[in-house]
Length: 440
Image (cartoon, rainbow, N blue to C red; front, top):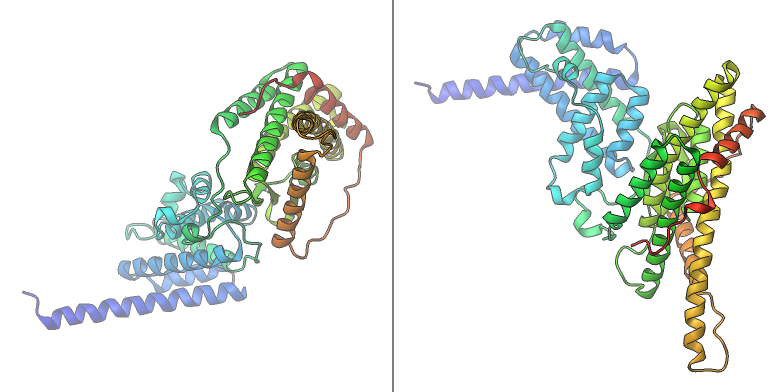
């Protein structure tokens, strides 16, 4: 029968183990932060000193707690789960990136689910951390694991923790965990039926081998989203106090290779859809600022047009041989595609706005003619879109108060540039693709 002295002895022993584990973890993190000793050496030293399974588990728990703490402190610095994972995949090895993804899941699990933006949970579903081999390498709390596996776990956790601690500050967009109920913008979602139609059209554009069909499908998708943007803008203007009417931001991946031309493509899509984009090249993403409907249009079109541009680039390489497979040619090809696609997207968007303006002005003139002898000449849509542009610019400056404009990319292969423009002309947009009727 256990006595009070036995319980006290076990309590003191447990406290001693926790204290030893904290000392080991503090040493690992301190040296890694200073980069004084290679992490592999530190990990081996830890393994040599820690051969007791109980102490191993305590060290593992302390390292996991340190990682969760580091993750909790990076959210107020503007990072979201997808941002951290995206940058980690550029910097860390795969097992460490997987462990970091698990650390983010563990940290966000400490909040009530309703106090975390749903978009964050969606981001977590898309990041890594679920591979069987990675999970096996990280079973550091298993006393049967050999020392090398425990060392790998320590190394990965320390590396992930210091990586997160040293992330630079970003602009905060959206609500932080725990703040959604108090600070959420309450933006009404874009109509799911509309998004389904747009996705279907873009999937058809990506999948068809016929350029004329791709042209029609993509034009139809842009027309749908442009008309939806107009409808939402007029609705917001009719009810200025409706929640969620202001612009906000989202981050999209702009990754290697050919990230410069890809960013140019995103810029062109944003311009046609009345958004602005700011590139964070070091982290592999761009921040898109605009209304919720416009941001969704940008996201959908960017994803699809990247597929179409890449397919067109590869077809050109197969037809023209090695010269069309060089990095210079491909970069210039994508840049030409982006430039031309921007012009054609703008044409489609402007056509929808002109048609809507004509309808609205005709309605306003008819209403005015019933009460006065003078026709009403105001363009209500132009006024609304002008105010939206001002709102987007203001939100951009709020997020990026010290924004600087970068220089334009140079064309290294003019032939590739022209081929990219030609591909955009052939396979992307055309005047015959517009659908009739309203978007929603």
